[in-house]
Amino acid sequence: MSEITAAVPTGSTPTGSTPTGSTPTGSTSAGVVIAESATARGRRARIALRALQVLLALFYAIASALPKLIGHESAAESFERLGWGSAGMYTIGALELAGAIALLIPVLQSVAAMALSALMVGAFIVQTTVFDGQYAATPVILLVPLTLIAWARRRHNADLLRLLRRRV
Image 1 (cartoon, rainbow, N blue to C red):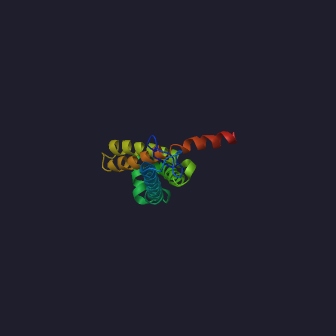
Image 2 (image 1 turned 90 degrees about the vertical axis):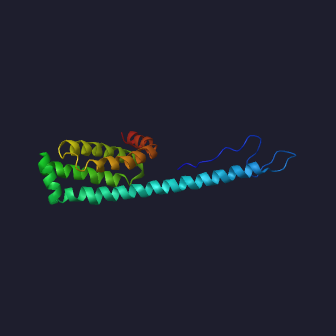
Image 3 (image 1 turned 90 degrees about the horizontal axis):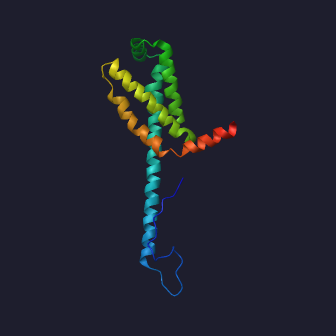
């Protein structure tokens, strides 16, 4: 994780050091306060993003994948109407569960968010074409936090590529 720091104003020196023949100035301590507050904001943002990932993972695992994987009546009816049957239902449920789990694994977070976003684009298309847009807003709403996670965790993609190259 990276630390966010603020630039120290020109002419001032890092905390704890002073140029020969001079005294510490207030501008240096102001730079330290800015850096500390930026670090605290960055930490809060990371915690909020992680909480969002956990909530989305719970949603996808419990509210979305579970009904499909246990063959709940409502899910089965929807997939029959689509013409995909139980095979499509179980496949989509398994993909959602895999995405939910991957959202919690640091090296897979960004890829999982992108994969779930692709599922939501498909869900939006299906909702608007087959189900007359009845629940089309749900996938669009879910795209917003998934896109945020994919973007914010994008550095993990390089880590994943390094891991995959090592194994090959």
